[in-house]
Length: 419
Image (cartoon, helix red, strand yellow):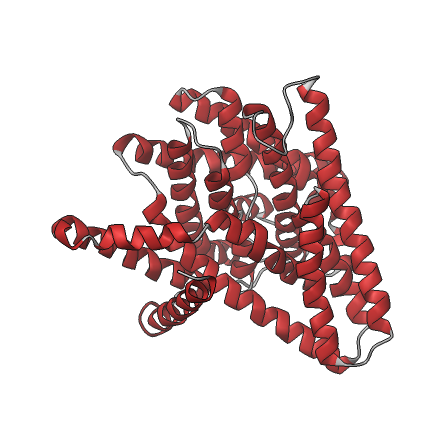
């Protein structure tokens, strides 16, 4: 299938499944599309098992194979989704929460990676370094899933800022940690740490280059874009410029071997705060805001549709399903550690909203980024297990946690907003 045919098919299915969800299930839009696509996939697999002569599952699997989910997300959609998410987070709000956001996005990701990696290695017999790779790809919360849920929940402002800010940054940090660990676990892969010299030194250099380089590039590109937009008063052109920043900046970051996700977040934050206040007219601000909300909604729908269909790429058997169920508990425990430790460290110096630990733990949704990273791993004997466990954790996280985090927040988090 050509790119246009694939894109057309995805858009048609996303619209059709969205309509089914709206008329039948009435779930939040993105989660509903995921549920319908997953049910459709399972129905096709069930029909194929009953009537194998039809070969329906194989036909669908061949179509899914033509869509490189990992490249489609990591090299295409992710930049737009992160830019759109960051565009609606104000720097002033984030500044008030920067300590907890910073600790959760750095220390939290590291602790979660370690806890999940050690636990998964013990449960499955997987070599520790490869289990740590699994810990790294499953630890970050997915900003796409998290921000989608936040739109449906009425959370306190400070709590919403913590969750949104942390999900935007720990995604980029988690991706860098993943690259570092993959470079150590699979040193033959191009673009990662080599076997020569100290692996620890190479890993530290890679982390610094990716994380700091991505942030600097995002700020520089965002600032230059802001300076250009200040001299223009044409909403259609300014919308086009922001789109160019998201697309071009992401690809430039990839070419320069710095973190493209962190670049997109940094640029989006600057344009969404400084750019909208000082570089846009009121009319332009409305059009830019509406455009990126629409982009966010459409890409969310397509992404969650693709996650549902990726069930065809997963190898299910009793051992992998058991490991996947155990990985759900490990991922939740790792998330609890990632949230609780920074909060307990900062608690003597500041007050936190009631229920911040359970709400942020349960609200730390995993999503398509984890699946894409698992699919990007080099072929090895442990990849099918990692992919299946990742998929099970992601499906549980989006459907179960995603549908219950708002009621949980309303139940235990209702008190005056605190810092």
